[in-house]
Image (spheres, rainbow, N blue to C red):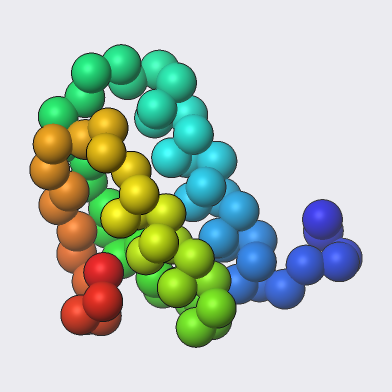
Amino acid sequence: MHRRCSTSQKIFASIIIRLALAKTFCINYGVFILDKPTTNLDEGNIENLVAGLRNNREADKFIKASKRKQI
């Protein structure tokens, strides 16, 4: 992954890993906080992140800090 992925792909992968860890270890969580989750992501990875967050029905509420309106 070190030399085969772009910076954007690495950042996106780290966000996915954090979401998976949160789902695994934080059972029955009600709030999920994201601080600038789209920083340094390309448009394709932003769309994937948005789709993944919309499909996540585990958390009751999402709190995000982002300048992007689609998040």
